Image (tube, rainbow, N blue to C red; front, side):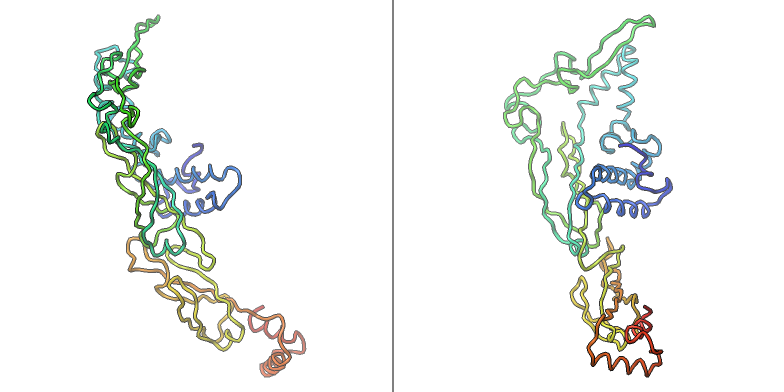
Length: 376
């Protein structure tokens, strides 16, 4: 991915978790493929996700700050495992100094024959507005690698087992000595016969073709907690690809994207909506049933309510993620509907009211009176 992760999200290098999350949500909504159909938007969306995935994880962020993209390459977790146990560095030194002492080959063989954790997988899930607020169960279908049940992951046909590679003698590596004017150097590379495993399968399992794993479609039931939002990431343990040589399976990460609602908007744990009332209701006040995510609720319109007034329904907003008992508020912005035309009877009454208030001043008529009344 080109560019600096911090610059991509538009945050400083000292940005905290909340600043990262706000920047990610804003950009994710802007560049999501379902919203933005412009060329390059999907690639930009993927870059934004990758940047947030790294910077929102304390360990990955630390490695990125120290080593840049190279420190978090190969999916972050799996790539770093090899780096942390000095596997990557050992390969570099081994390629230059493998001819001295012969210790590198044994280490490489042991490392390659040890259990390896499976890859993590990602799944993007769209949620309805109310589903994100109240949570619930959601069934998804994923494809991941599972160890072959016929050969138990060995890749060998029943009754047989993998044999030691005759090319590398089980080392997983081959060496080639090269003489140069500066001396003799030994080049170490992965064995082309066994691909670094140190073993070859003479009779392959019919069920998996010798791979030891099969791609399997699986249905999973997810529990969506109340209060999730676009950018929330759920981790499902051990539902990634299966590990090799007895290693644990990776994890499945489910990224959530909340669809917009025609009536409600969201700002953190607050729900926002507009309410249109008549000018008479604004003047005299009223008791109105308004729509909320919990159904219709009564709302008192105080007499003399002005356009743009925000009325609050407490505890009718979004449950706080991780603490669903605590909810935000529903904030309702009042929009006063002033008619362009009135009946003769209404006009007569309004003119009488204008005269009583002394607001008519001989010009502007009813519209001037209403405009003065509501600040138009």
